[in-house]
Length: 243
Image (cartoon, rainbow, N blue to C red):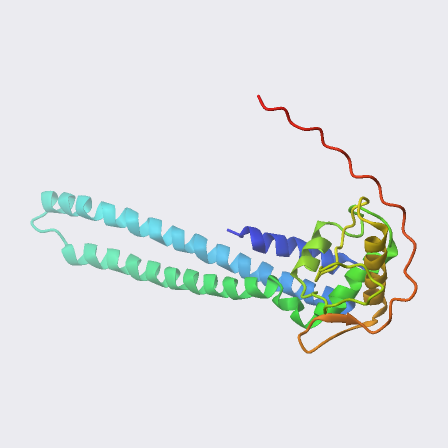
């Protein structure tokens, strides 16, 4: 059975491999990982089914063994213990082989699943981050989720190492945030959303590098921040009356 984390990754890789605007290296890595995972999952399913079939056949033979010997003992002078024992032992050998194959297929699936759960993209993290930034920058001031930033893209961004070096440029209003918010809220302050928009644009343009600690920093000064719509007032929540 596919676990929830793997299923989320499979869906994200499927989305990435089909995204025509994504870097070819990312699309190719995602497609290759999906193909490999599909093969490993199918092999594991086949071996697990064979294991169950051989286990059932062994159990049936084991249960019928004594009953068959009783019939032989009743109808003949002696019961053929050797033949009965050899038959069950042969089924045990067949099951043992099927069990080994199923366990080996499971180990293979675990290894392939690890590759699908981000391993296939480890060498392309910066390219993937820039692609996400380009999508964010295509609608720079839009608040809320957009068609270019669906759950799959948000999931991939959450996986990426994208912490920023502190402190930020003095002209940016980033408080103490280490990661850039991908989805904006229209109640956030104008300086904060303008700073986010400027930073995402630098990532989209490739104007960022990683320091020794692998954290991001911009190679440009924040001199001209983009204009963003005014913040909407925070809705008042009426107090809840106690019963």
